[in-house]
View 1 (cartoon, rainbow, N blue to C red):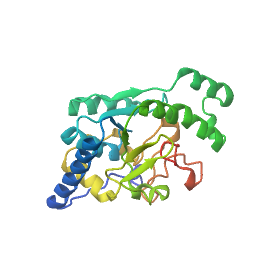
View 2 (cartoon, one colour; view 1 turned 90 degrees about the vertical axis):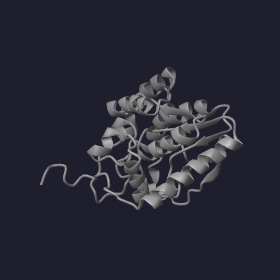
View 3 (cartoon, rainbow, N blue to C red; view 1 turned 120 degrees about the horizontal axis):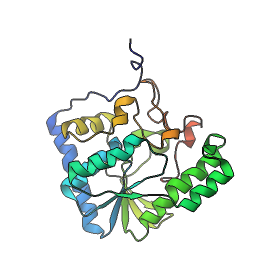
View 4 (tube, one colour; view 1 turned 30 degrees about the horizontal axis):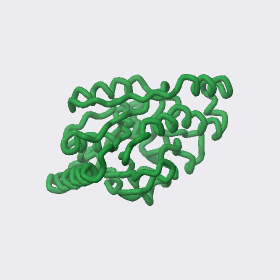
Length: 242
C-alpha cells in the first residue's frame, strides 16, 4: 500500500446525464434569476471545488457577476496558480483582494507570524485581518453576493438556505449549490470538465490558507483539515457566520 493510499481522494462519480443536466439547468436558472434582480452582484471564490462549480455556471450564464478571491498572503502556491488557470480556461477576470499591510503587521507584532496556533482568539484575529476585513471591503457597494457553500460541507452549515440575509452587511447572500450532495458536486465537475485545484489531487477536500489546511484521511470529516487543532464547531473563519 502506498503512503497516500489512506488519504481522501476525489470521488469517482458517474451520475445519469439527465440528472447532471438538471443540476446545470437549475444552477444557471438560479444565477440568471439573481442577475435579473440585482445590478451589482459579487462572487467570492476560494478556487476550490464548490466555487469552481459556481464559477462554471457564472461563465456560462451570468457573466455580469463580478468574481473576486481573497489573496490572504498565506495561500498555497497552487492556489495562486489556480487563479491564472481559471481565468485562462473561462476567459474571465478574477480580482485578487489582499489584506491591508498595516493590519497584517500589527497582527504579527502582537501574535507572531503563526500565532493563530496558540489560541482560538488569535486564529479569529488572523482570519479577520486576512479574510473578513478584505471581504467587507470587497462587498462595499454590492447589492448582493454569492457563495459556493453547501449544507453537507459541515455541521455549521446544515441549515443553509438558498437565500439568506447578510445581517452584518445588510445585503442578500445567495448559495446557488446549497442543496447539492457530494456526489452531485464531483459528478458535475467531472461531467463539465471543470478545472480542479491541484490540492484536491493530494488529499485536500477543503482548501484555505496553507498553514491552516492539511490533507485528510478518507475516514475523516470533510472539514477536518481546516484548523484541525480547534474543536469541530470552530471550523469557520468568520466570512459566513451571522
